[in-house]
Length: 180
Image (cartoon, rainbow, N blue to C red):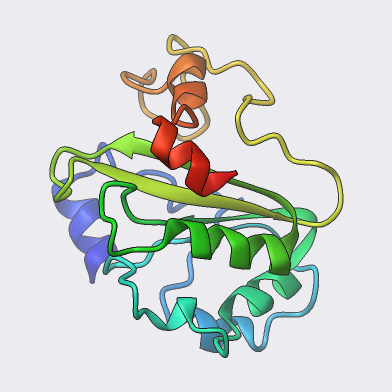
């Protein structure tokens, strides 16, 4: 229902659903990934509707979620997941990064962006790649030209560009210590 609401009320934002490269699965990620053949996906973007709290099931050692996502990715495949805000000290970003480094065994990095409607005004993302080719999350593979109309976008980008992308990985000193 949420996707339908986006399409109806925010059509300029709700784009890409018809793109043949996109397969949208709206369901319990753990249950879904249990049946995905190994090496199926290039990228998995986990959009948890609720923020990940310190006691969230994904952080429990017995949770199979990250292992299942890793299995579903091809070598060098990438997962992106919401990783809360570095300003919420009740959430252990450092623990989540350590867990993902153990499981994915590829590149792991933390980025953040401005979301004025979010409680702290910023939100973080954890990017992980499965072992395989090194993935440099900090530097766009292709320059992001704000004057170019990308893929399914109806007009050129207004906010995002190569500099904004790279700046998302620039962290305050206390956060750098958590993510190294």
